[in-house]
Image: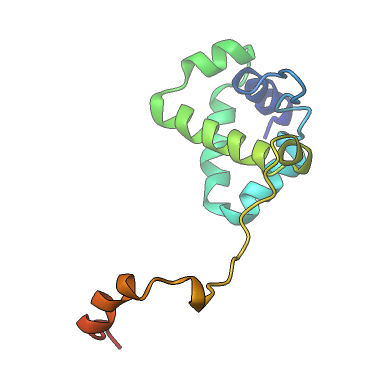
Length: 124
């Protein structure tokens, strides 16, 4: 896959901003892409197809030529890779989702009563 073209297109989607790195500065084509594909390996082949279809085109023209589905997939991958970057998350003051234990004293018994009264409704 042409990582240079991928990153150039990604920079059009996420350019550098005030105190925020561009997509390529956030390493979306290397570290970020590897992380995304680790969690979503089924996206690798379609992404390679998208980038291969853009071969020989300037980044803006390549991006403009994508159909809606290809654009959506590329944009999702780029955004996911960008927001997996630790520097980006730090600048956004987002440190990921954290498990927060439920403290029984914080639960309102009135909210649970209908659930308890209903009884179990699960399947084995």
